[in-house]
Length: 130
Image (cartoon, rainbow, N blue to C red; front, side, top):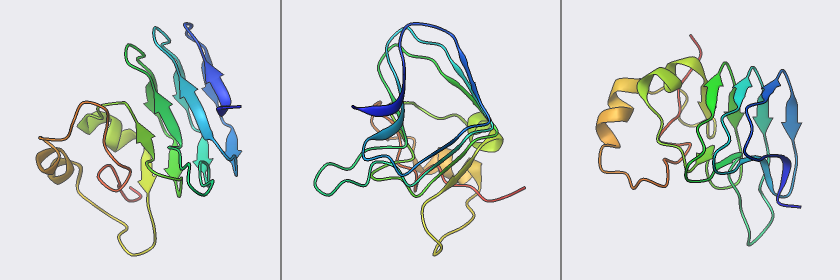
């Protein structure tokens, strides 16, 4: 199994779930899918030794909308494959570890301007509580 939840070519809503402790990614969104991920807690996934995964993996062509999610302490990245904008950063919580808790979304956008199209690490997309 590649993920706890795999969304293929549709537009479902994934709301208010606690997705945790999976060896693979918590959620994989494949091409042409346009799901709404709302108020989910996605933590501690993808930490298999030698094969770390992101909490949320987004394939090219997929367009998920993220609102009010907590994405923290996952294997490699919080999200891989999605170019996060400032609005998405404001509407979700990203956390890597206890050493660095809050980063300003504008500074993140400025500092990641040269990040490759395959996505940003959760460290780069981290933000603190409102």
